Amino acid sequence: PSGMRASVRRGLWCVAVGLAVSVLTGALLSYGRSAQVPRSMFDSAEGAWLDREIQPPIAVSRDGVSFGMTWTRSPAFDQVQIRRPSAKEWKEWANDTFPEVAEIRKRVQEDLAKREHYNFRSSALDWHDRGVPLLDRPPLWAGFPPTSGEVVAVSTAAYGWPIRVLRVRGAVLADPMDTSAMTGQTSDGLGRFANPFVAEPAWGVAWIPIWWGLAANTLLVASPLWVVWTGSAWAVCLRRRSHGRCVSCGYPAGTAGVCSECGAKDTHPSRA
Image (cartoon, rainbow, N blue to C red; front, side):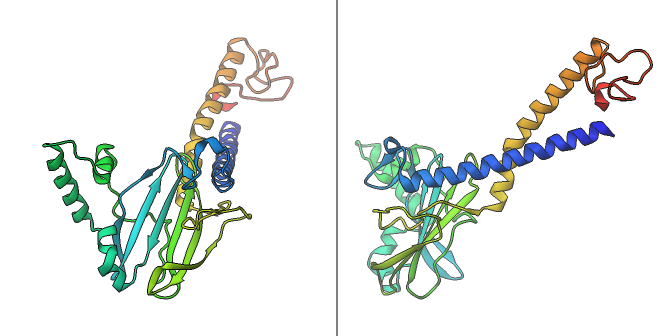
């Protein structure tokens, strides 16, 4: 039926618009961060939007290997850096820098007890007071460094609103025995941008899709468009029918049941 075909066409157009808006938004956000425009929204010392939230660094494991994870969140992008300290570094400093989930929660409870007696503040309490849940595992789009070799950290930035749809990934190259001795960095982002932030290798315009996020964001944008478009079409059809006009083209329908202008045989709004 023509009504069903029209509804499907509207749906396809809305999906196309939702897909275009999602991809363009992700690309523009990544460009804005890489080019640092507008300047008023950026912290020039750290290369991030001012309203970001940095959760406490935490230890994560994969295939029996321990890594350190740092997760920066903002309305416009998320960035996850996963670092592979050496065995020596875990003993010297990484255990304190990247504690286990249970250790972080224990520290929060200890700091809360201290705050009951005097005005005690800590970074753990700052995170706790915001009521944001502790994310104890990396997202699916985040990358891990290999278990050996000179790639000692992988940083992944994901862009999109409200759901992340595109990602860009960078790697930190360093001495595997001393990961602070960085020798270089790489990025799969498009374009060349001056990056003064050595610890931010995920730089450039994002172009690699996060498929589930892209599908969800496309539907999130397309659904209200389809509802508004379909509702408007129904309103037009009902108005035409109430005035004795063909709901397909708006020409006076007459009494023969067939529009003399477009030849539509069924002028009920649901068939328009």
